[in-house]
Image (tube, rainbow, N blue to C red; front, top):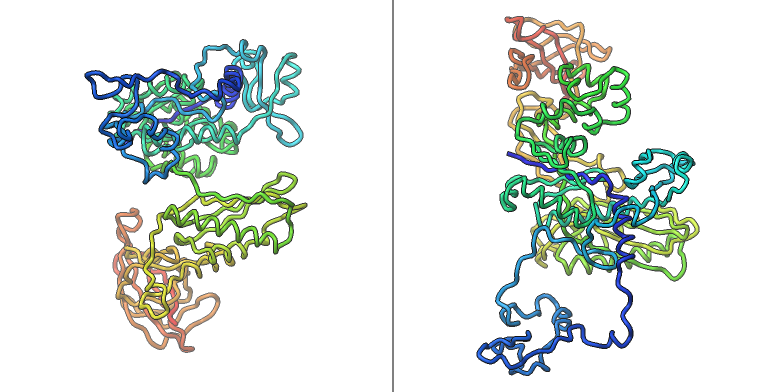
Amino acid sequence: MPRVASLFLPHLAIERLRRVERMHRTAPSAAPPEAASQPRFADPVDDNPGACSVPRGGGWRPGARWARDGATSGRPSQAAIDALPAHQRPTMREMGRRSEHAEHPFKAMPSDEVGGTALTPSLSWATLWKKPTVLVLRTGQRDVITAACPVALDLGLRPGMVAAHARALVADLEVRDAEPEVDRALLYRLALHAARHWTPTASISGEDGLWLDLTGTTHLFGGEERFCRRLLAFLKRLGLTAQIAIAGTPGAAHALARFGREDMMLLAAGEEAQALADLPLVALRLEPDALAAAARFGLERIADLYPMPRGPLARRLGLRTVERLDQARGLVAEPIIPVVPTEAPVVTRHLLEPIGTAESITQVISDLVDDLVAELLQRGIGARTALLTAVRVDGEPQRLGIGASRATRDARHLKRMFGLRLAQLEPGLGIETMHLVVPHHEPLGAEAVGALLQTSRKGRDIAPLVDQLSARAGEAALFRMTSQESDVPERAARRIAPLDAPQAWPCWKRPVRLLRRPELLSNVVALMPDHPPRRFTWRRQDYHVVAGDGPERIHGEWWRTDREQWAVRDYYRVEAEGGQRFWLFRRGDGVDAETGDLSWHMHGLFG
């Protein structure tokens, strides 16, 4: 039984700014120079353990190899141990410690700002900033409020209000610039912390929340209710206001967390439709056009959509509205794309002078690719996508992305891929910094040297050719055809990726070219019930049949729709006077009217 939690942070942007402000206010002053030269831990160490074999004041047990025969002066420092590579560091037993305690799952995250400690929201907003504060973002020719502190909210200021109007309403208003990228980074760090400590599947939900797939994990924390209480307390220590809801679907949890009446809501499985009935339509994450259309028709609550037929609802509010409604009620699955707690490989070049010529840009990209390949080789991974970011002198970033159909760390191939798209870069007055990052990578082990020789029986890898053709013609232009389990011919084939292996094809004779949809034939002359046609008209041209073979009877797939329960098609292979060979069929068996209307259709061409 799936259980999904939606975590909503309504004041993320403004509380992050408060967090930074308080860190700067509570940061300790710099230590005097003489204090900096003193050792960090000045407590005396008692080297006379007495009856105990372990020193009372710390140090190493006498049996450790790192004890250097009991001489504390020869013991390596912790800094020297941390400087060693991971595979050369001594084990816990060698260092005199048999085990280490596990970190608490709700331990506060280490801060990236000054101070480095968790924050408690003990100071009021008036004590911190002395006056109401809002964050604004430039939109077109005006500044729009994106977040407001509780003091500003009590005064009637709301997100979406123009900053000039807000200044007219509140005289002593503090206006600051919003930093959506920094807010997004904090939300991403919360998602990584959740993936490492609470559940393997954590995803970012919009700009102010997270999705946590808690299926089979809450029993580790004492149940869903206790987990939610601990999570809210954890966020409170970070200085963040939060609301959480747990339901059987991501859509229902998202709606209840943002529009529910309580800070913590636990919804039993199967009660999503009833719980969502009284919520507004905006809780379904509908598009603005759909919300405007719903307002014109007088639809306000989610319950208003339940009795409406699917066809009229999709025509009036869009097909996306029907999908969102089904996802919230659990009728359609909604996947959660988790964040992966790994650091993406990235290399950077800071240039002494701005560059703008194609030769210089190509040279820098070549150097970046060489550095990246070395990083990928050290990690044992290969790049599936690579993103090049070129920062111009005016601060405008230019991005250039490439994709590989298979994980690779071939420097020559990556350079060629970037060279094919180099014309998309606009250097402007010059590029001063270039970054190359691999957002999507896969494990890539070593390859036998014999497979790389020309005399090897192993087939050549066509992945580089596919990547180059995709860069020129587009990803949608390359595909393979494979068979699919279906009796209906137009459903028996589908497209797959160029490097995917196709399934086995059936032994039935099928035309080389199959039309996307069967086309109706006119002026058909045929002897009923089992003979092929003698004459027909297709695309305003008459054809006289000289030979024919059939019929091959194909029944409809009754388990898909009721319309195909008695449907029958009789297929024929015919040859016209000019040598053309066609594949056509007749609807119905010529006996029962329920099987078809006896109309003829063209479906494919041979040769």
